[in-house]
Image 1 (cartoon, rainbow, N blue to C red):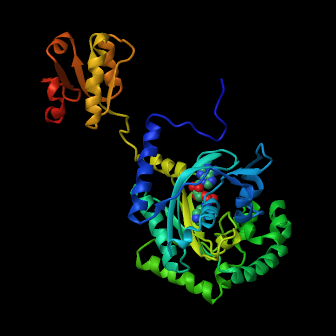
Image 2 (image 1 turned 120 degrees about the vertical axis):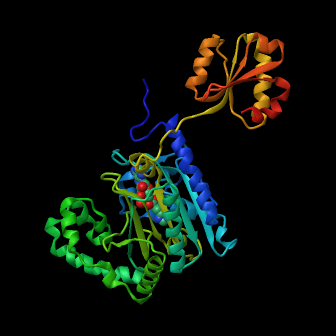
Image 3 (image 1 turned 135 degrees about the vertical axis):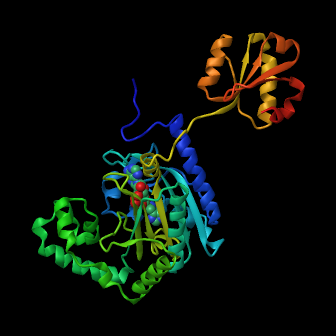
Length: 417
Ligand code: HAM
């Protein structure tokens, strides 16, 4: 038997209804904030991700699905959307159309990680990007949108962790301090962190290694190194969050796993997830658009992991009584009645009802059984008597009430339901 690839998942029946529910909220809430959907291909030229996410990140170093296509071009299955979205915005000059671009997306992403609960190799993200404003008001809008999406899924057990990694100037100063600090503790650092020390010391703060974590605990605090501009940006955002009654915790060690950020970075966590407890993250990326060949344009955004959202909802019992249901199952006693059944079905479908009827030449009794199994709300019965009198019997499966109505009045079937 051929099996699916490790770290991927097949979705069907009740499971897919959960996805329909969350996808519907994504559309609805994005629309409420005036965000437009954007879709890009699931693969890009490798440089799109290499240049933006950063050569020293785990994503670029270890996790990308990169291959040469038959034309010899290096292609990568997208590990995240921001870089691909920026590629698209620059290519089509989308930022010339509006002063502020408000975009959202949903789709599959790929990272070669060790699969475990909440971590897969193909996963899905919902995300949004607000392009064009350098002001903290747009960071706030993005956080409001993320929280509205989370609330629309009835998820209320979560925390928002926030930090500022400042502008380039502040970060350079901070990096020097970090290098000094880690050099003093070099013997305790993991090999990977030692390697990162001189290339990108900020990456060490994102290390999952236990010994590294102990050293990181006492390292210098980035908030002490923010210059006036960076500090003002962050202070205003924090003030907005306070005034809006949004709960957050300041996490001065939060740097995120991608290199394109500046100023604000944030993450959403839930205690309903186990070890992979971050179900979303984002931040500001003021230099990325320019780095990918566009005109200098500030931007901020976030993404939520959809598998993790659904896991939280599962663990909070949010999905009760999810069943595929149909309105009508038509039971008929002779397969010669097929044409008439087709006609009735098509009419009902025209009025917006879902209809199934037997195509296996099953017995009357088996058809009734199947109607039950498929959670049909009503059964329509066409036996010989109904067929000859051009009638149908309509049975409500929840209360057993049965009525006979002329087939000619099927347009008004809602009056009988
Ligand atoms: P990220 O933190 O790499 O950010 O991913 C966002 C979310 O995607 C994570 O919090 C997690 O829920 C989910 N996720 C990531 N990897 C996996 C995986 N292997 N299995 C399951 N879920 C996963 C970004 O991707 C940025 N592009 C976010 C952003 C948008 N920043 C600015 N704009």
